[in-house]
Length: 268
Length: 312
Image (cartoon, rainbow over the protein chains, first blue to last red):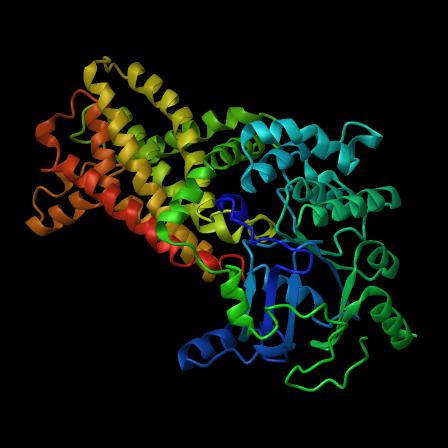
């Protein structure tokens, strides 16, 4: 992580009331260009014709996924993001991670946020063990550190509970196992900003409890955690603040209980 | 007290109970960001900082190349044996076609050593480019999941090819010895020749990695370009013999071709009958110049788009 490379920044003197922002989202709009949508002809001759006439593909559609969202996250907060499917939750996280450029508006972050998504596949043809090693090294750990933490990561993931699976290629894992290992690798490091996009949903109950405990730990280590989940209980257990997005707009931003109550009323 | 707000399109919403007012309240978002040293998300670091980060990932690059090499042939029953078999079979095919059937061996002493050296050296560049094209486009999962300097990918893939080349070199040296060459001190020249070629390959891999990350069609097009390049690089014929009657500029163009330069150097190092009088003028200078030009240029070119890899 880029955060690891930063010199230990002198943290501003942290009085009881002073809150240090880690993520500032300032009136962000995000527009997706979707290729291959629509009804344009997909044949080879049609593609050639477009090239010759220098016309853009008729299949490109613009989807305005996030419309003017602003909020500020502070150090030590765990923020749940809720909303129905397609409301822009994952999109805004990917923009914060710097993987998606906003159409307008700005996103400021402290260091490099890490995004943990369901489809964040690591290297499928390599063993779980190798993935732990490579993932750790890629995040900027030293070889010694990875070796020291290896067993802890494997234990946390619970991959080896039913036999020696960690030495099998990751393509043989079930989706739940793969998601668990990915989370365990990413959570082994202290992040300034960690964003979890439904990555815990596939784990079993025991793993979910372990990871919720780990999220609380990360918060204590003065990081900021974002959690996208459709499981309101898991958000209640881990988050103290909730942002509710609907149709790409920020509908509500406040303490967990109030927002979830309103959200549940809305979805009923 | 948060309430469901009347959402408006300018994004004005009711925000839940604010904390006790602090000195930060009057600041605009950009002022607040500046005060706490926050940076714009996804911005690209400076070249020196980038290089430092990349150096910090040297173990990752090394382990990635090792793990990928180990996983490469896990689906095949003969496993790692293919690392040696593939170059060997390649050499056999080219010998059959160009040595026996077409007969480009005319005027070349020790054609087998000449041909096999040419093929192995060219394959090193060729496979570096082919894996470079997919280095970013084929690893989007990893790139989107974890943050590391993206140049790690093309570098790791060329390192894999270097490792493969080491295997091929054992085969090559065995073949060269069987054809009657005697090892001498000049064989050591193969080391600087391969190092400069590796730097050149890495730069080239980074260039095509950036191109390939945007234009996915490049992976389809590349084999044809590489084959054209191979046939103009004197892999299976002697440029010197072929161009003895051609205009001078054709000779210069063919000699300055980086693939031909590195092949010439390897042949000069390993084969006794290839003497320095047969080498084009300034061949070592061109070898180093190509390495510096493409190596540094490719690195900067790749870095320029660092923030865009994995987007979309």
